Image (cartoon, rainbow, N blue to C red):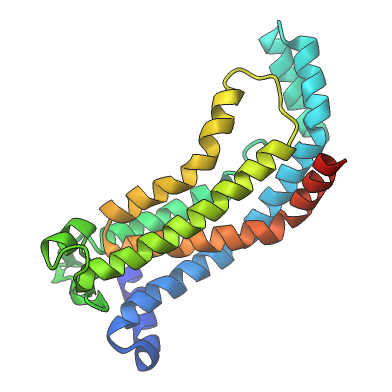
Length: 243
């Protein structure tokens, strides 16, 4: 973790002339962007996989209709179909899984009092009036909701809420335009999935501010990235609905 701490500190030194006391916070945003750039090729591959799965929906529906009473035969048929079309069922979750180590590193870095046997100097760094090692309940105890640190969290909550609302509406449109498969639990998933974006609000409220910055930056990046990568699916869905 000391190597990771040195990387964040080095980025902060580079950004200090521009961001002064908030240079470490800016370094976290830049680090998050670098992580997202690193996994972007996988995001593009995941988008291609999702589009391929959308094209396969009629065939999958037919297989479910044909083998619905034989789960083992259905599973084998689905595996064969995905293999034939070179579509991985796991492609959509790989980018998220590969980001988890970076998030947990950020979480532990700003939760640990000592790094490499030395006091963790990063804990004293701030984003305006909010310590990067602090949490929302610390901000509430020190000045309340509209105090210096509390205001920082209000801004983050507003960003997350805006991104979550955008994702909610976009996911609803995508799922409304996508073919509905006759699969157990699919109805419940259709209702729950658009709401998952709002879970980020809880994450931001309970993790250290540095980790919250990582989450907010990554979530915002994801929203913009999905607009770019899936724009043709939305257009196709809108045309299908209009037709």
